Length: 142
Image 1 (cartoon, rainbow, N blue to C red):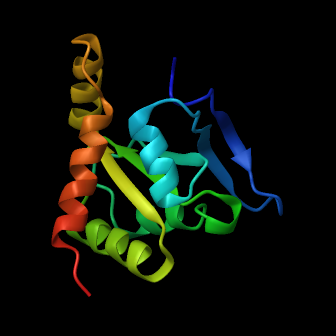
Image 2 (image 1 turned 90 degrees about the vertical axis):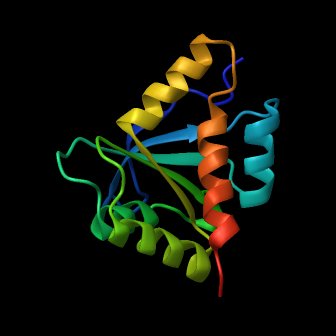
């Protein structure tokens, strides 16, 4: 069973001003996604896909952050890009969590490839996301 339901692609906001790349409902029944769903109070994963040659920066994180809305149970986002995130992107991700409790994981092509390899080997691809979250929270300070 896939822990994420099929996404709504190019989903417009209610006011028709913004278009989110994809919104995946989180299904119940996968230990890892259930934990994330509970800890983040998020029934959805909002994903943005950036096909840029440069690493994502602060602007790309801010763009995803505006689509996360805790009252709508959308507090968790994935920023998928070709390159690993820049330092300004990582700082903006921290600010997003500390100020608004919006949690963003940034996955590069190499992270996504590693997730596919784990899945092919019968292992849990969520480990890549979980590892990034552990690293993020381990060093987070006021």
